[in-house]
Image (tube, rainbow, N blue to C red; front, side, top):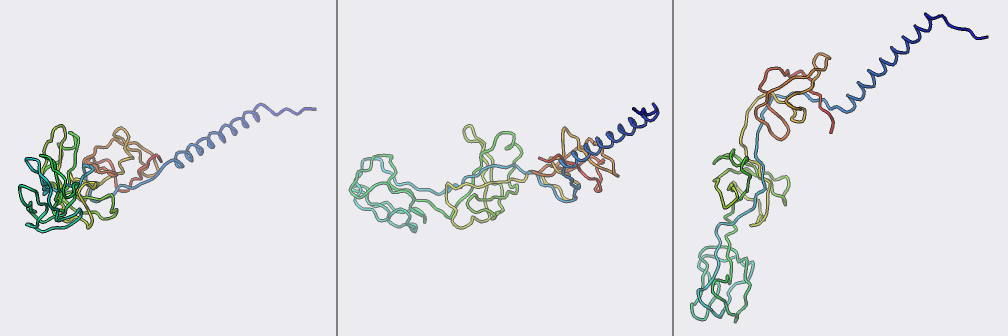
Length: 264
């Protein structure tokens, strides 16, 4: 014998089941959102905007021994890697006598031997002042337009991680199809040589004690936040932006807000 429940009981069961599923759905949705979300607070402090580039170490004081006519090399007084003082003898030729160092430096190239013939315009020796160095950074047009003389820069050499050296912009100029920024350093770490590279950050904007939010929290000019237990979206205006944080110039973000960020 089959017992049938009254229609009202059926209705109550369906309502109860539907309510349970609805609550379960909300809970799952909340869990999914929070499981894939990072929470951050706005912060007060400085924001620094920078232009980034890869710099190459350049030695401006370089001397090469060349001749205007064929010359036999009678004597070589130095070898590659030697440090010499200004006026020291370098090479002696058959007809033009001894070539001497015009400044103190290091012999970096010496491709010939005694008794060989040097042809006109061919470098017989290269002398470099390794104590006088600077950095050159090639930037694209959009970036270089924001860089000015005497702006502060910071340099990190690829071979010496953790040693961040302060520097400044000495000049900005074009060279053929490139836009060059010359960076001078307060000091070069020991062992840095011409041709080495470094990461350069040039400060083009800085503000102190401003409210800022994580840059990755922004999506199409909007940020999602939780305020007083409610999730809302706000359209924000930003000012100075660094690699991770953006200054908030609108007045609709509070320091107590929780910024919701989709996990990467």
